[in-house]
Length: 145
Image (cartoon, rainbow, N blue to C red; front, side):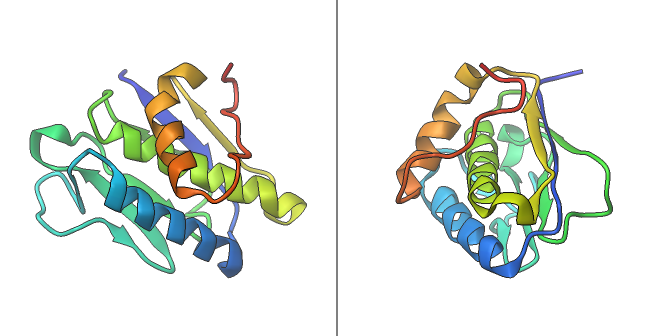
């Protein structure tokens, strides 16, 4: 099936989303992966008040990573990255989302973030997330070690 990350998020209040948005913009700026709106689209990643959307550029892309502030249409979401370089940015963003939802407490629960990989597989993404946060990471991968 491929290396895949999964998440189900609630509607996220605008204050928490702005914190997430700020971290994601920093991830986009600092990642070593070349990102674009879509693998075959030269436009930059989209990070706005409603959505986060990006892919690896060209052959470095696989499936588009997409998160909506209002929780999407319900159900689970997933992104197969095939361990391509943009996986670093995907896992960093999921760490940032999980971090801010954990900080927000019960207001934004329930949610889950999981992966075919283990916590050690997220090492690059975790390091990138921690480099853009001004505080220790408050998130552990569901089912991770």
